[in-house]
Structure formats: C-alpha cells, structure tokens
Length: 297
Length: 288
Image (cartoon, rainbow over all chains, first blue to last red):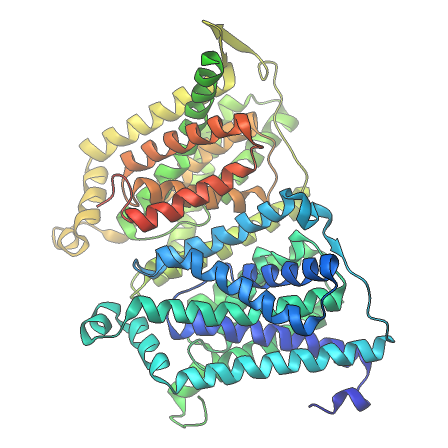
C-alpha cells in the first residue's frame, strides 16, 4: 500500500485518496455514532471546518500542511465539543438535530462572512511539484490519517472508554447507575470523532486548492457517512472501512454514467431508505450474527 | 422608532403564524408516534410547487388550491407512513430511525423536484401580491394577513378536533400512554397514519402561503426543517400550544433582529436558541 506511489497511476492514487478520505470520515463517524449511539447528521461540518481552517491559514500565513492539519482537527474538535456540550445530558435524538442544523448554520455563516471568502470560496496556490508527486504526497498523508483513525477506533474498542461508550449506547441510565461517567465519555467520543475529519478536511483543501461552502459543508455528504457506516455495519471496526470502500468505488463508477447530480441524490436517498429498512445492521453486522467468528471485529 | 418596532413585531407574528402550521404538524407527529418528520419542510415545498404550477398552467388562484394541496399531501403522508414508517415504529428508537428515514425521503423529494423543474427560485405573483392595508401607520400586507388568519383558523379547528372527536381523543390518548390506549381499543397504526397525514396536510397549507410570500426553491427545505426543529424543541416536542408559541416568538425575534442585521443570520439565532433550550430547559417551553 505504501509503495503504491512508486508504480501506481495518478488516477489510481487520486481515487484511493478519496477512498481513504471516506474511510476516515466513516470510521470517525462510527466512533460517535456506532460506538456511542450519538447519531451525527452533520459530520461534514467537521470536515468543512478543518478545510476552511487549513485554507485560511495557508492563505493568510502560508503555513505548511503538517502544521495546519492538526490545527484544523483541533478547531473542528472545539466546535464539536462546544455544540455537543448541551446535548450530552439529553437523549441522542437532540444530538441528531443539533448536528444537522449545525451543518446548515455553519455553511450559512461561512457563506455570509467576507473573510472566509463568501460563496465564491477560497483559492489556494498549487504545490510546486508535478501532478504525480503532489498526488503521491497527499496519498501518503491520507493513508496515514486513515490508519490513525482506524487505529484509534481499535484502541477505543479495546479500552475502558470503548466499553463505557457501548454501555451508554445500549442503556444510558443503566450505565450511569453502574458508575459510567456518561457525559464525560460522550464528550470524549465527540472530541475524538470530530478531530479526524478536521485533519482530513485540511489536507483536502490543500489537495484540491479550492474550497467553497457548498462543497465542504454538503449535507448530502454527511448522510453519506451514515450510509457508508450503516452499509458496512455500525459499531464495528471493519464495517465503516468496508462500507466506505464499497460506496466510494460504486459512486465513482457511477459518476461517469449518471449526468444529473440530482438523480445521483435520488438514488442515494432510495438506497439509504432501503438500508435503514432492511439491513440496518450492515454487512459486517450481518456476518457477525451469521458466522459467529471472531474475525469480524 | 416605535412604528418600526411595532411593524417588525407584526411581521414576525404574521410570519410565525405560517411557520406554526408546519411546527404544529411536526410536534404532533412526535407527540403521538414519537416520529420525527424530517420531510415536513419538503412536503411544504412540494405543496408550494403544486399551487405554483396550478396557478401558472391553469390560472387557478392559490387560495383555491389550498384544498387540493391539502388533499394531495394528506394522501402522500398516509402513503409514506404506511409504507415506510410503520416498519420502524416498533424498534427501540423510532425517533432516530424516523429522523434518518424521513431525511432520506426529504432528499428524494427535494431532488425529484430539482429534476422536474430545476433548482431555480419560483414565486407566485398574483394581482394582490403586493397590496396592503395601512392602519395607524403600520403596514399589513394582505397576503400575509390572510395567511395568518387561515393558519390560526386551521390550528383552532385542529384543537377542536383534538378535543372533541374520537380521532382527536385517540391521538391524545396515544400521546399519554400508548400501551394503555391500545388496550382500550385504539388502533395505533390507523391513528398514527391519520396523524402523519394531518401533519402533511398542514404542511400543504403552509406551502401555498410560502409560495405566495417567498421565493422558494427545492433546497430551501433543508434550511426550513432546521428552523422547524429549533422551533419545536424550543416550544416543547409533542406540545401543540408550545409549537405555536415558539413559532410566534421565533418569528418576532427573527423580524426584530432582521432590522439590524441581514436576515440570513436569523438561522444562526434560531440555532443559538436551540442550543440554549437544550442547555437550560430541554423539554422546551411547554413540553412535558
């Protein structure tokens, strides 16, 4: 995987960048939604905030992505914790509403404020290398971020934090009665789950060299995270990876056949309805149930 | 100065009256069936399109298309409920699942409208669109006043239905204790579908007025549903008077703030109110 830049085509590398991005997105959503049960409907907002942080820091201060990516993640984390704070004491449904509204509101604010570039977005300078090298750099960067996210999820699932989160997901009152610090753990999950999309977003803005509010705060992409995780299996580690890969590859394949973006969205919506109604546990969840084997973590 | 304040308050109240229709529908669905109808705003936009095309193609005055929109949307609501919502109503968390499911429905509806007519702004302009009456220096736009009056009458009729008819009492019974109501012979599925249909019909009425007052486009449903959720949580989910009160309050806040800063910031204000409500009093103003 890591040596791919040496022999893979630029097209393959750029496709894999999107796959890695989506895996990061889905896996980080899974930390908040799958493990803790806090279904986030505006996960894209963390990505977008990271993207804008990275873009503005580059535009105004010329900082390198190695510095701005973690900062982007931190800004997203701060936003998540601030808006999540009122929600941790009430049921998960309110979190759903707060996050989806957050997506729309932040998009509006970024569109209105002049210093974020407004509706026309921000244009960034291109890296002074040839396309193959640039793509390779971002390929490796995204690969690292993705591996970090999966590793973090793995670590969480094996730790006290993870067990606490799953207890909260199953029955919050019972968990609290046993002494699980529900609010604190929920905030931790929200913090971790929002950091990684922020980092990925920063890298994305450098890679694309152009961002605007409609793209990086696209509510539909937030739903894509839900779909990818539901498809793969929420609450598992492999599930989001599988779901994201399947979804991204079919989506990219379809991109060249379906012309209308609206039709794309309709098919997506119908597919989401189908998954919610008929396979809510996802592929890995189904496998877990069917073949009681330990490999489906 | 006083005139400006009174004028803004009036604008807010008139606007709030129309939002109240959709907010009441949303709150009702939640109270009776614990279903979060994320497609509420999309239904209103659909109704706006129906009355728009009826007006443009056949010259049918929007006020007459209210009944048609109501009927179409009631049927649509029944259909969506029976085919989709009933499948998830018996799971442990119907609210979240219905939120997700109906959001997907809203996405399908919104993009179907985009495919059918394009994502451009549309509005209905009739001979009386810009007319208004001036009383004591305050301007009352005819269309908004008519919208307000009709909205309030509909909500009044709804309250009477809730109080005096069998269906209304059944709805209230299910809100209080679902199991006990079914033990008493209430058909939860039938009442649930009727409630959902009523919610859709309320959006139908609201949509006609939104077409008359605003320029609408399919994607605006995303913004509206966000504001509707803020209204309903602020007023107390499940409470009809709460939804009404919250709509008026938010309408007024929006109008008064709109005097000083651009109206887009109204959504940010609504959001802040939402967060504050969750922080201070999660059950909302009049919720249980």
